[in-house]
Every structure is written in structure tokens, then in C-alpha cells.
Length: 564
Ligand SMILES: *[C@@H]1O[C@H](CO)[C@@H](O)[C@H](O)[C@H]1NC(C)=O
Ligand SMILES: *[C@@H]1O[C@H](CO)[C@@H](O)[C@H](O)[C@H]1NC(C)=O
Ligand SMILES: *[C@@H]1O[C@H](CO)[C@@H](O)[C@H](O)[C@H]1NC(C)=O
Ligand SMILES: *[C@@H]1O[C@H](CO)[C@@H](O)[C@H](O)[C@H]1NC(C)=O
Ligand SMILES: *[C@@H]1O[C@H](CO)[C@@H](O)[C@H](O)[C@H]1NC(C)=O
Ligand SMILES: [Cu+2]
Image (cartoon, rainbow, N blue to C red; front, side, top):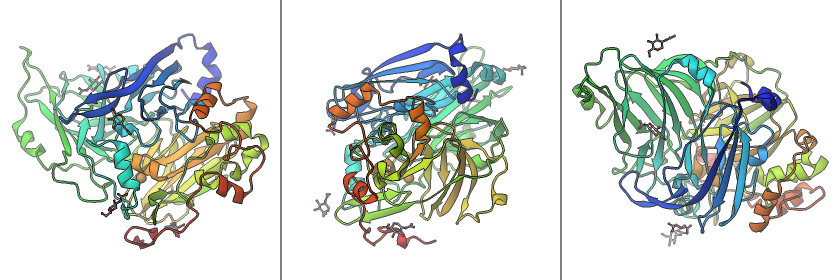
């Protein structure tokens, strides 16, 4: 069900229930790859719990920050947050940070259904462990799939060092070429230990695969089995067979796997980190792969032995030989045609820059995103008619103002040798075009029935054409899902129909005002925390915009050195 219809109908949905979670966020110790380190857990546990509900339910997540030494927040990746943008979670965009000891309650409709996840959206923090699975069930769709079991699994990279330290390295004055520290290992379901899928002959399984990485993508493949892809990022698609899928940070794939009808051997699966997002060679001791098994049992309950030739195949340098699924070949089940008649054009370009004395930054718009004094949403809610002026948000947040029901096109160029997983909050967009070089600009070159998702990879030295309808009033973050790049500023903010938001009488919640006050930030007014309209020059001066200086040329320093 579309979330708009759901919002209109939800009071009448007798089956909708409220699902409540009580989360105390705090430090625990874990060793997912054998190396013991402090990680951010929930209620004393890591991995953190799965959030699970049915579409249309109300989810209430009560959080308390017991970290003592770091601020935090939670974002529910994939949720439309229709009418509840105040609970979307990104710090500086829809809320202030939760200081140690502070509490905040996130309440929202479980919509759309699908394989999703939730994570901290503060200061590049989630790779320290604060990220977990979130499954929103659609019982009708799941019944139609005729599966015996649903198996949520995750992939992610993993560091032995903590993010505040790694981010200092990345952002620091010595990192002139924007190098990202390479991960130590790759995790499958939060471990490097070999796990098993226990399959029964001829039975169907729904694998719900999410990549929760800081940086890298993961390939997933099961020997001797086909992955029939039925959804991506919660969008149902016409079933398409794949041998291997590539899942990048933030992305999700739902795959149906059918057990072999007459197995004579068990098989192995592989989850493997891809290294194309790394800016320098992977250290030799990085553990790139996790091997597990698709196990069948004999009548006596003992596992059927592994296929020996497969074991050889998979270690140590496996590469997918039967191709990797190209996600743009997927067709959404609703067959929605390409949105035409664009009323709002946005052009972005990746720009990785080095600023002498400041360090590495990266941007999609005119400058790297920097947190404003007032979260942009709170400005949109508290400035009346001034909410339609860019200076209300300040150039530092790279704002774009969308009118209600605009047909929006984002054209993004990436004149860099590295790909980026680009994510938009509050919407699934059509991936109308993607390619290398620059776009020709013609409608004819776009996909007439584009696939839709909420996180898509822009290729190296390539471009993306994304379209969506501005039918979800709110303030939505558009950003690279590499958490280093979020902190480095590869972000923009879409102010969508602020007049409608204000007409809906949405206001800054008292709990949100408390968070700002305890963080020492003004909760209301324009980006400088004032009433009245700022001039462009005032906004630039008063709203945390420190990048009105030219970047320093040098190796990958200013973007001018990249080959085009
Ligand atoms: C916060 O405390 C944890 C747990 O004691 C520690 O491992 C971590 O390094 C600290 N982080 C900072 C930024 O001080
Ligand atoms: C992965 O973890 C989930 C719980 O988060 C569990 O339900 C699932 O069975 C695990 N998958 C495997 C293959 O162990
Ligand atoms: C940068 O590198 C220099 C030379 O190695 C070192 O002395 C300095 O402490 C480094 N600065 C930072 C902020 O890491
Ligand atoms: C459902 O799947 C089972 C195998 O698990 C198969 O035997 C059965 O025919 C399927 N039913 C339908 C309606 O497709
Ligand atoms: C990157 O930003 C700098 C500084 O604003 C500008 O000079 C340069 O042209 C930009 N590069 C690209 C590829 O847009
Ligand atoms: Cu990026």
C-alpha cells in the first residue's frame, strides 16, 4: 500500500497496532571478527535488536542516550515518515543531537513495507555499532511469495578503531587527498564466523539482505542456487534471477532462494567486500570475505557434505563469473512510467576538495554541508513565509526548495574515479538514467519504466538522473551513504512544501526544543536562530558556513585534477 493512502486510511485500519521499543543506547564490548573493542549497543546488547512490525502499525522507539561521552540520534532508513518528519533523525536536519543523558521518542507509521534498517545519524557514528535491521511486513505480499521462512541477513564492513579517531584522520589537515581509512574486515550478519542457511529440498526462502557498511559494498552469491530478486529498498519488482548481487551501503535486496530439489551436496555462500570505494590499496591483512554454507540435512539429521569443488572455487580469490545483477534492469511491480514534465531541476556534482588548514571535505553542491545552528526542519516550521527563502537555511546546508507536487529531477555528475551510494530520505526515486561520462540531456535516453529505490550508486566518472514527485512535505536529507562522506559534507537538504507543513500545523515538538537547549543550540528561527529574513551575506556569515574560500590545488586536492 502506498504510504499516502495509508496515512489517509489509517484510523480505519482495525488491524493496525502499536509496537513499542525501549532503547537504552550505551557502550558494550563485542568481537564480531575476533578483535574485542567497545561498540555502541542497545540495552546492553550488540548486535542491536531487529525492529519488526506490520505495514500500517505505529512504531514507537523510546531512546535514551547512556553513552556518557557522545551525542546520538536514530534514523529509520526506508521509512517515508509521512507527516512525522520531526522523527526522521538526522542531526542538523530534523533534530538537535541527543546529549548524554537525554531522551527522545521517535513515533512513526511503519510504511512502506520492506527490508529496511535503522542507524545513528549523528557525527558518522553508526559504524561503531549503532545500526540494525528493520523489517516491515506486508503479510499479503509475503503470502503471495509462498516462502517457508524469511531470513534477514546483513553485510557490513568493520573497523577495529573507533569512528571519532577515524574521522579525525579522514578530515584532518594531513589527509590532502581525501583517503578513507580502510576497514579491517567484512561481516556477514555481524560476524566473520561461518553461518549456515538450513535449506530443505524444494522449499522457498525469502532472504532479506541489507548492507549496513560505513563505506564498502558487498557481493553476495550462493553456489548452485539462484537469487530471485523480488524487492529492492522496499520497492517490489518483477522477479529477476541473479547469480550474484552487489549491495552497497544503505541498500537492501529481497531474494527468493529455492532449495535444490534433490541435493547430493551442501553448498557454500560468499559475502565479499568490494574495494572500488577504497581510495588506496587494501592492506594485506584485511579480511574481505565471509564464507558460509547452504546446508541440507540427511534423513538422519546430519548435514550432507559440502561440494568439494566449490570449496576450492571459493577460496581465496573468488570473483563472480556469471555476472553481477545491474539494478537498473529491474522493473517495479507497479510499472510506474517515467515521471515527465519536470518542474524542478537540481544539478549536483561531486567535488572533493582539500582546504589548507582545515582538511578534506567533499560536496555535491556549491560547498560542503555544514550543520546549521537551527536544524533546517525547525527553521522551516518556525519562520512562516520566510521558509520559502534559501537564506533562511543558509548556503551551508546546500538547500533546495521544492513546491508541493513538483516533479523533481536530480541530475548528478561524478567526475571522480570513485562511486558513491546516494540516498534520499522520505522518498524512493526513479533511477531514470545512469551512465558513464555526462548525460546527453534527452528524455529519449531515459528509462521509460525506471526502477525505484532510495539508495543508488553513482558510477565513477559517471552520472545519475533521478526523478520523484514532491508528495511528502518535509525536510529531507540527500547524501552519500559513505558515513565518512556525510561528515565530510557530501549532503544537501530538500525543503519540501514548507507551506503545507505549516498548514498541517506541524510544529517543533517540545521534546525537540529540549534537545536543542541541552545542546546549547537555538531551536527556532532561521539558520542563525533569529527571527526575520537574513540576507544572503548574513546567512553566509552567521550560519556556520566556513567554506567560502577556495580549495587548495594538489593531488586530488581541488577537484580540477580529475580526468574527465
Ligand atoms: C567513549 O567511551 C567509550 C567507552 O568507554 C570509549 O571506548 C570511547 O573511546 C570513548 N569515546 C570518546 C570519543 O571519548
Ligand atoms: C542473521 O541474523 C538474524 C537475526 O538478526 C537471524 O534471524 C538470521 O537467521 C541470521 N541468519 C543466518 C544465516 O544465520
Ligand atoms: C600531520 O603530520 C605531521 C608530520 O607527520 C605531524 O607532525 C602532525 O602532528 C600531523 N597533524 C595532525 C593533525 O595529525
Ligand atoms: C509453494 O511452494 C511449495 C514448495 O515449498 C510448492 O510445493 C507449492 O506448489 C507452492 N505453491 C504454490 C501455490 O505455488
Ligand atoms: C569544485 O569546487 C571548486 C571550488 O568551489 C571549484 O573551483 C571547482 O570548479 C569545483 N569542481 C567541480 C568539478 O565542480
Ligand atoms: Cu561518497
